[in-house]
Image 1: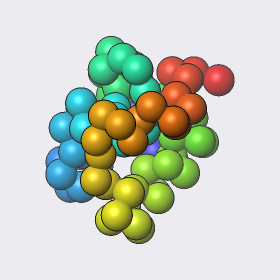
Image 2: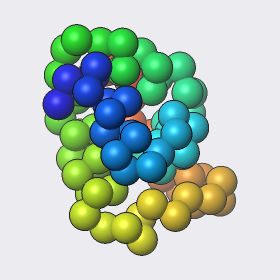
Image 3: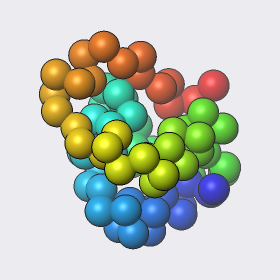
Image 4: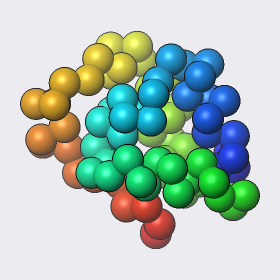
Length: 77
């Protein structure tokens, strides 16, 4: 998936930039914004995480406590 396809994915899966940030354990919303502006493919780990969020609805429930124990995904590898 290209970064420019991420806003459509978010819309289809009912994520805001902030809820996606929390679900992925990313510290900064700017990371999501940077990915969305990129015409490059998203990092493979991010793609796999997005696929997981689509397939397992229970992972969509995000609380600030849930992100404390997750390892953030870096903006670039």
